[in-house]
Structures are given as C-alpha cells and as structure tokens.
Amino acid sequence: MDLRFSPEDEQYRLKLRSWLEDNLPEDAPPSEQDAEFAYRRAWQRRLYEGGWVGINWPKAYGGQGATLIQQAIYAQEMTRAKAPQPANGLGISIVGPTLMHHGTEAQKKRYIPKILSGEEIWCQGFSEPNSGSDLASLQTKAVLDGDDFVVNGQKIWTSLGQYADWCILLVRTDPNAPKHRGISYLLVDMHSPGITVRPLKQITGNSEFNETFFDNVRVPKQNLVGELNDGWRIAMTTLTYERGISSLATQVRIKQQLDAMIDYARTTPKNGHTLAQEPVLRQQLARAYIGVEIMLLNLYRGITNRLRGKPAGPEASLDKLYWSELDKWMQELGMELQGPYSQLMEGSKYAVEGDWQYNFLRSRAGTIYSGTSEIQKNIIGERVLGLPKG
Ligand SMILES: Cc1cc2nc3c(=O)[nH]c(=O)nc-3n(C[C@H](O)[C@H](O)[C@H](O)COP(=O)(O)OP(=O)(O)OC[C@H]3O[C@@H](n4cnc5c(N)ncnc54)[C@H](O)[C@@H]3O)c2cc1C
Image 1 (cartoon, rainbow, N blue to C red):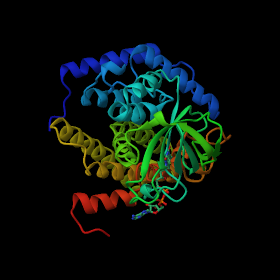
Image 2 (image 1 turned 180 degrees about the vertical axis):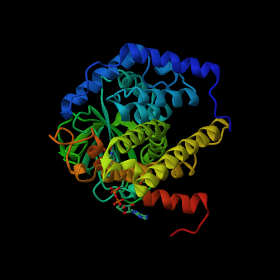
Image 3 (image 1 turned 135 degrees about the vertical axis):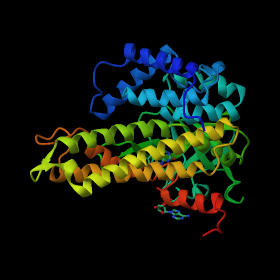
C-alpha cells in the first residue's frame, strides 16, 4: 500500500484549500436548528456555484467525476476547514446516485438537477417502528388505484423529514409475496395531502429525525423507480451508497477532537499536577491516539482495495463498527477528562469546553444508523469469517 498522494492529487488538495479560504462562511453556524438548516442550504448553494458539491457524480450530472483519491482529499479538507455539511446530504449521497442507476430518463431529468443546487431537499423513508434492522419486514403499503398508488402507513427516524420536499419511500405492494419480493420504491412529494411529519426530540435537544405518517397519500404511477415489487434490489443500491467514503471525514473530525482532549489534559491542573500526568488518563489518551491512527490505516486499506477493483464488500462493516464504537468510547473519555464540569452544556456559565457534551450525547447514533453494531458483527461473523448463522 502506497500511503503518499501523487503531485496531481496534492494539486487538487491545494485548489480546494484555496477555494475554501475564499468561500467559507465568515459567520459561525446558528445554534437554532431551523436557522442552522437555512445556513447549510446557503452553503450548499455556494458549493454548487463553485462546482464543489457532489464531486463524485459524473460530469454529465453536474459533478466532477472525481476519483476515489480526490473524494478522500475532499472529505479530509472539508473537515479540516470545519466546513458546514451541505443541507441536502441524503439527496447528494444516496438519492441522486440511485436515480442515475435505476431512474427512467424522465425521472433523471426531473429530479437530479435540483439535488445538487439544493432547490429540493430529500429524505429517506425506509425504517418503520417495527422494521429497522429487519427492513424487509416493512408494512407501509401502497395499492394501485387508477394512475396512482395510494399509500398508508408509518415511517420513523426520517432524517430531515421536516424540511424535505421529496422522499424515497419503500412500500409493500404485494403482501402475499416473500418479504423481500413484495416491496416497491417510490418517489413521494412530501407536500402531498395526507402526509404528517412529527419531529422527535433527541437527547441532544435537536430534532434530527421525525415520525412520518401516510394517510391515503396519492403518488402518481410514474414515480415508481424500477419495476413493481422490485424495490428491494433498488434499496440495496441506495444502502451501498449510504456506506460511502464519508468515514474519512469522520476520522479527521475524531482526530481533531482527540487533539483538543490532549491539549485540555496538558493544560488542566488536578491534584498539584496536570490531567496529562494522571497515569490512567495518560494511558487512555494513548489508547485513543492509537485507535484513531488504526482507523485511518483501515480506511486507506479499504480505498486501496477499491482502487484495485475490489468492491467495498462485507469488509466495510469492519470500518463502520470500528469508527462508531471508537467515537462513542472517545466521547466518554472526553466526559471523564472534564470530570464534574462534563455535566454542563456549551453556553452554561461554568462550561469548560465547546461541544463535547453534544458530541457525547450524539455519538451513540453512529452505532445505530446504517446498520447497528450488532448487525455489523453479524455481517463480519457470517460473511467475512464464514461462521454459521446465529
Ligand atoms: C441518527 C439516525 C438517523 C437515521 N435516519 C434514518 C432515515 O433518514 N431514514 C430511515 O429510514 N432510517 C433512519 N434511521 C434508522 C436506522 O436505519 C435504524 O435505527 C436502524 O436500522 C436500526 O433499526 P431500529 O432502530 O428499528 O432497531 P432494531 O432493529 O429494532 O434493533 C434493536 C436492537 O436489537 C439489535 N438487533 C436487531 N436485530 C438483530 C440481530 N439480527 N442480531 C443481533 N442483534 C440485533 C440491534 O442491534 C439493536 O441493538 C436513522 C437512525 C439514526 C440513529
């Protein structure tokens, strides 16, 4: 494995870095959620105008056709610059690429252009109250009535549902077929009559996701993606894109947080010396450092395999399991370093460090979305190690 970047790739990095220097928003993101979303939407518009959004998309669809290495550089530079996330994250990462593969020409023309510009925001209606890990057991149903499907049921965990204009929705269209075969994939206008979106408050105080109810919602037949009852295959394409290259950005973020923890330990007095001189905390910081470096090497190994033409495959579960559990453990370490001050949220009078509390409360989410830690372990056991099914 060659861990160096080529001169052309370094050139690409410099070009992006200099664009970021000229274009990053000067004002900090607002803390109120709706205002923050509007801020990210404006940022996406700026990225779009500069040609820096959806860089992995083919040029024909407004992307750069960026190589895997360029995508890795992009993820690292955006995180290093602490750039905001574009507002239409799901549209860019999963909806556009799925439509490029499976959409009709009319669907591609209608929906794809407004994804990168952020004119239309997308959400993902897959999970239901009783169907998460076992997604194929979903019960939201759609029945054909003339030229429309009529949709009834409930989704949950719908990220961005409260802002979304459109939704990729999995519905059961044949209740008698085996569970993976009776599912269809629809594009649903979130402004349709009969849709109710109820934000759910998380422990962080934000409402990142929602419950979404469908009560006799009419969806035109031409909004079916692929064939009737073939939605599972299309959903698998969507889920493959969900597990993309973004883990590199996560690695840079975790590394920045670790650097802040090390600084804090070096400068914070405790019992006549600094936290960094406490034997147990020193060891934990060293363990965290090793963990973050291993994460980077694992990710580089994955990229190298893909450059050699191997598909992402079940080994991707190692990365997901590793970074999400590492992140959770490291955020707990941050709380331990702050001791009693860890109980104070950012903005409280005596709070000592920025967003550590938020990161701690948010970190469990990483071990749940895109397949929980237990599901990743099942995949590693069965498909990487070849162990019998549990
Ligand atoms: C921040 C966040 C954003 C999300 N955004 C979206 C979104 O936009 N759209 C969307 O559709 N979904 C979204 N999800 C939902 C996510 O995909 C599900 O939470 C996830 O698939 C797990 O499903 P569940 O919550 O129903 O848990 P369950 O599947 O009910 O699992 C409950 C527990 O049982 C364990 N478990 C389940 N099955 C097994 C098994 N076979 N072996 C061992 N243990 C098992 C799980 O690991 C877990 O600990 C989001 C989730 C989060 C946390």
